Image (cartoon, rainbow, N blue to C red; front, side):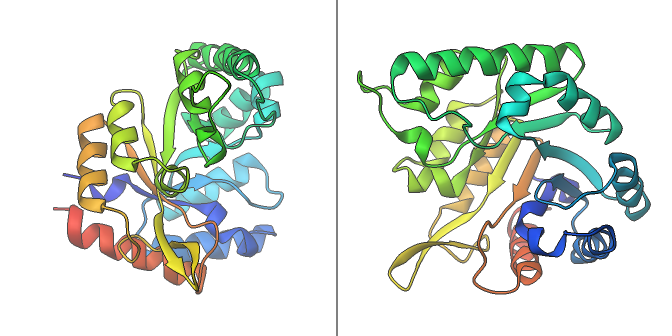
Amino acid sequence: MMKKQQIAAQLYTLRDFLKTEPEIAESLKKVKAIGYDAVQISGMGPIAEEKLAAICADLGLDICATHEGGQMIVEEPERVIERLDKLNCKYTAYPWPHIIPATRAEAVDLAHRINASAEKLAAAGKVLCYHNHDIEFMRMEDGALILDLFYDNAPALQGEIDTFWVQAGGQNPSCWVRKLSGRMPLLHLKDYGIHERQRAMFPIGSGNLDWKSIIAEGEAAGVEYFIVEQDVCLKDPFESLADSFRYLVKNFVK
């Protein structure tokens, strides 16, 4: 079964409350008070890595992963490694394609470049994952999905599947978690529902995704961190994170 310490909060959810160092410290206290033991670093204002690591350590928050810019990951992987070292963090993820492939050849080329960075990170004891949105479910001229081309042509790359965006791309989240079994240390949990006749993001358990199946597949696939994220919240983001945490603990933590 999932352990409580495996549940993490993606701080991008709280980006409007992370613009200054005092705001970052206060927001992290609130995250810990909700019950989270781990966080993924993303979407925050300027703060030295050493200071951020110290704040998290004092609160008992594990920095389980970061998101770094796609261009920096591809062009300056050494900077990514240095930042992860300062944060005492093993995992990072490529969060958005800084080049949108228009053809199969372009997708394969980008995959090879990402793979080269993944290999450099691996040599330094780090792990590069890929965070999908819906755009990676576009089909190329031969019918291949961009996301399949990325994983098929970047063997050193690991996964960070995002459940909402898989659903938004017309695919099945549980199937994609199973597909990357053994290759996906990070899983982004984000519920999918309808609000005012438009697709919307919801706290876990209050949308339409099959969480019993998703979590079971994640556990079977060897996911290390189940990371709660909500890019856009229909209410206070801290309340949204709390709702998700309570649902996961009640239903999946023993």
